[in-house]
Amino acid sequence: MLALTASLILACKVGAPDGMALAGATLIDGTGGPPLKDAVVVVRRGKIESVGIRDGFQLPRRTREIDLRGRWIIPGLIDAHAHAAQAATWAPARYLAWGVTTVRDVHGSLNTVIAFRRRGGNEMGGSPRVYAAGAMIDGLPTTYPDAIGVNGEADARKAVDRLVSSGVDFIKVYSHIDLPVLRAILDEARTFNVPVTAHLGMIDAMNAARSGVASIEHLTGVPEAISSQRSSLLSAHYRGFFAGWTAFERSWADLDSAALTGAAARLAGEKITLVPTLILHETLSRLNDPEVRRDSALADVPAEPRQEWDVTGMINRAGWTDSEFDAFRRSRPKQDMFVRAFTRAGGRIAAGTDAPNQLLVPGYSEHREMELLVRAGLSPREALRAATRNGAVLLGVDSLGLLAPGKVADLVVLTRDPLKDIRNTRAIEAVMIRGQLLDTDSIRATW
Image (tube, rainbow, N blue to C red; front, side, top):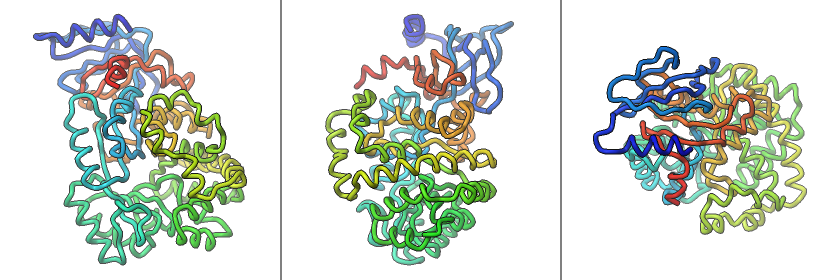
């Protein structure tokens, strides 16, 4: 750390070289291929200029070499399901400290989210890149007051037009949207070449995928596609958010394994991306466990947001008792099995967290999501790809998630091998965003 910090200080002096060569680390470039040992990554003006090996490397002019022997370099992480604008005053530094250089913000107050995205896209340091849906589209009555409520297909098209005019990167639909309205939204969005993602409730996952949604959040709509209790599940969503979510989470435990495997293969065949947010399912299943609230990572969250989580109040509003939590925990292995089967069938998984909602820490939760993906049956390499390249593919941004010439210089320097143990992604020494290399101590010092 001391050698790296000294190099950074020198690199910041007036008249210093305009490029840096990160030399000697093992490079995991995001392609899914084998790691490149003793690599050299040359960065200049915010982009990767070249990638090679140290043997025979000639340092270009106006380039400072930074010795990273004994380290590993991975692409900057992408949180594919976040509500970062809700925590605009404190979350950005947390994301960066944990190596998350891009967030996909899936809902918030429209003006707030768009302003946050513009700020994140322009800042040289201090904030991750932000891609945003703005306010989600929901049926009436909307689940959240800052959603855009629609009543029928004409309203839905107007909502899409409004969002596109505001400059959103994609559109999100929520659980009170039915199939005819979804198809109107998709048709209007195709006019502007804007993708649509879905948190499903009144539509099952297969109908949503065949209609053309780009991605599905939280594994929603999967039980509704195969459960023998499909009608009661859809009715629960109609009654309200907590009723629908409770029925959805409980239903996984009773799903037939063969039916789940078949549904996973069919969904993979639709070339849809799933953002399973296993960390959300895991956290909700254990809200009644005091140990969850004693996680040392929660110290990253300021006191006021921790109070606003009001976990006890949420449990009471949802009407959850130990019976519900027991059911949620019984469902977790089936959710893991579905993710494993979907991946093995060639489906694309993107890692997302739902942070900063209850007990989900911006940045840190991305590492927990990767750990849970590995626990579900993915390899560390697949989990890393879910948190890097797959998120970029979902966003439709070719310059992210890969470390190759011409790509943006967003990367993370680790002191331990993440392919040996996925938990080693937390061993972060430095983070580069937009070509600016920051050691984690300096990021945390801004808190």
